[in-house]
Image 1 (cartoon, rainbow, N blue to C red):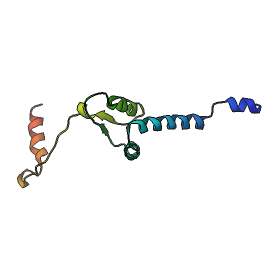
Image 2 (cartoon, rainbow, N blue to C red; image 1 turned 120 degrees about the vertical axis):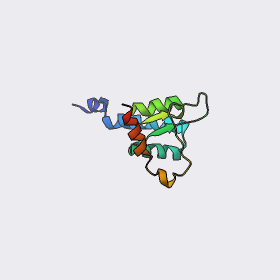
Image 3 (cartoon, one colour; image 1 turned 30 degrees about the vertical axis):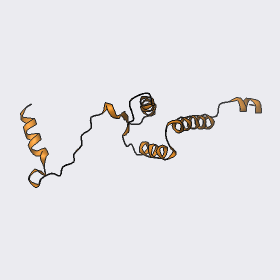
Image 4 (cartoon, rainbow, N blue to C red; image 1 turned 180 degrees about the horizontal axis):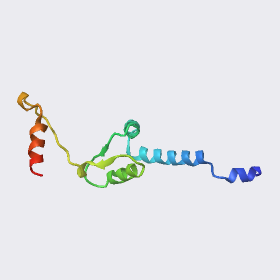
Length: 108
């Protein structure tokens, strides 16, 4: 293979670098550098990613699809079910699962 043929062959590293550069530019268009670092860290440890924001065309759905296509566990906030627990358990109720599961299993 001569030099011209070698140079016209696609190089995996270049292609991967181009993809990474394109992805990074997309992320920079909607996230701060700090948020990009947080996002990449969350993806690297398999942490679920919840995307939220004001209603309207802000790019939430696009970002979620983009992340899901790359294997990330991502969902829009409004499509999730959120439970907020702000009260401390009373001492008598430290194991709520015991009675819950006993009652639930009796219903099957």
